[in-house]
Amino acid sequence: MAKRPLWITLVVLVLAATALWSASALAWGGRAEPRPGTDVVLVVDVPGSEVAPALVPVALLALAGIAGLLALSGAWRRLLGVLLAAAAVYPVWVGLGAQALSWGSALAVAGGVLLAVAAAVVVLTGHRMPHMGSRYSAPSDSRNAQPDLWQSLSDGDDPTDAQR
Image (cartoon, rainbow, N blue to C red; front, top):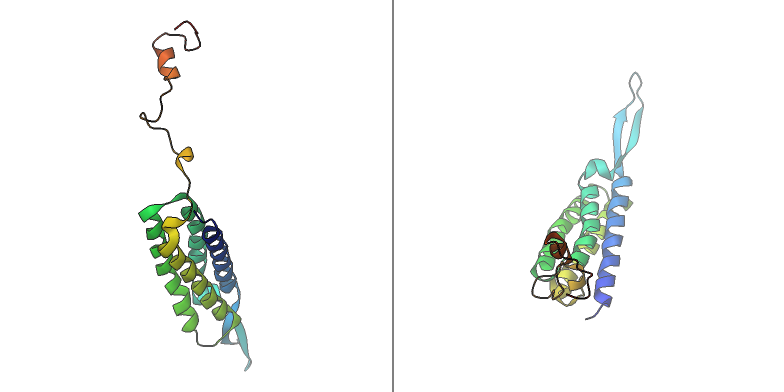
């Protein structure tokens, strides 16, 4: 199993989350507001969180995707990739639809593209990436040939008695 695509995908998800979170904090343009009682008009920066309020939740979804990528396997991992791809559409759409090109909107597009790339890698190669194995799963009865010590205690037997 190749571990490299997994680690690259994890790093890309972190970069996507960072870009999206930063895009929500940066200015996406200005808004003209008249100053009361004067003829002065002030231009106030509009942060990305005001223009696109779902940027932070999409960034958090990218971070949650890291945990999901490590914990899931098979069809569930591919479903996670599809979910991440669907979430990647929003920042790209909002960033490209911004009225003025700014660092914030460019960073939103970059974060969305990074999220889409990570999602594509998960969908296409996720089944070949390593996942948490059976050592993290609860043992089943068929694999567990050891006697049940708790049941022995409940029955009144001493499980440490060597003469059994």
